[in-house]
Image (cartoon, rainbow, N blue to C red; front, side):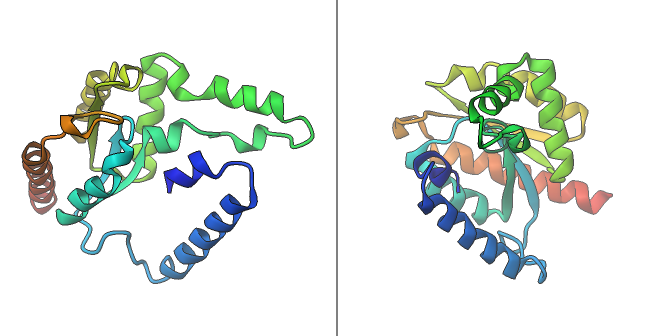
Amino acid sequence: MIAPVNFLQGDQNIVTYFGGALAGSSRTSPNREGAVSNEEGYLFFDGMINWNKVGWLADKFTAVNACVVAGRYTHMSFWQEPQLIDLKNPVLGMAQNYLVCPNNHGAPIMIGEIEKICDKFHSDGMVMHAARTCRGMTNSQFLIADSAKRHGRQSLFFEGDVADESFYKDELLNERLEAMIESLDAQRRAA
């Protein structure tokens, strides 16, 4: 659902789109139906999304029954404090949102916010997309992974790019993702 946020801003189309999404989630929520059947892991996705690979990545996660429940790009980059925006004077609220955006702060603040989101969504692990052309999102990923480990979460890295799909190695991501889900399953059984 990140594409509409980026490409339908400011008109009725986005209201219509998210109205339909809300109605759909309202139907599945009472029945406790998940986004992925037989969910075996809840993951936090860190890094920029590659628009060419969104469906490809979704298929990867679904194939191992993993559900991406949150991410830095989706949950920490856009208007995280909507109550600050006064429609009669929107510039001040927009400025405040940009100032409180965790990506605009140092690693300790940003990592603290990531951990809060992971706790809120019961994330088991993190998938770190090290995008070659977005070092602003990837510079702190080793620190994020270290924090995840201290909080009992696993992490995996894979390289890619925001626009160039030739950086993706299908087999490498498959192996790492399958190993993570198997490890999470073993942890659950042991507990």
